Amino acid sequence: MFDLWAAEHSVLREKVLEHIFVAELSKVLLLDMKLPFEILRAEFDSNGYDIVIEVGEVTRRIQLKAMRLGGKRANVNINLALTEKVGGCIIWFNADAANLELGPFYWLGGPPQAKLKLPDSKPARHSKANAAGVKLKRERLRTVNKGKFWKLDSMKEVGEALFGTSPNNFWELKA
Image 1 (cartoon, one colour):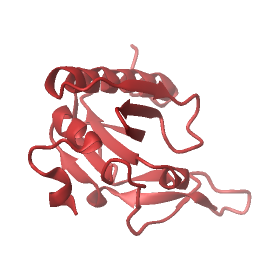
Image 2 (tube, rainbow, N blue to C red):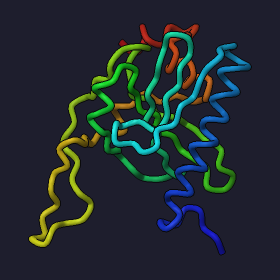
Image 3 (tube, rainbow, N blue to C red):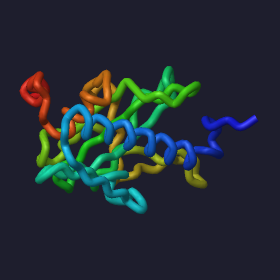
Image 4 (tube, rainbow, N blue to C red):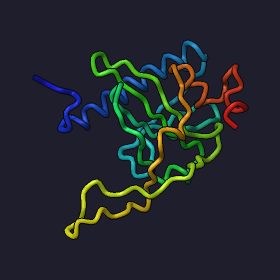
């Protein structure tokens, strides 16, 4: 029996969830927010982001992180390169294993056109130890705890966070 959540299917799972995320966000941007947009995909994520979305003059570089709904993961590793670009942000979301519905979402980023400022974090470590049994630091990655992210309940709230058009003054509340 095929198990999408098995480790050997991690690349397939990542791509499927990225496509679902982009499709759902596209519906929100077009139908709810009435915003035309352009989406670009990174060939690989050495610069810290998976996708780039442009709406008018606003550019967002987005690192996507996914976790199975009910998962216990307490932190994610963030590439410091994402802090060097304007519009960098991380969207960490849950996916229901049964139907691949997304949400809730966890947001870490700043206002549109601002650089990402990571909260206090420590360097990530390699998951496997070297020959001496030491898990070396990964200096260009930082481990950020889930508690540093803002919880967003819907894809519409994600769109508002990305493009600063929230009727609830999202950025004033988060400042």
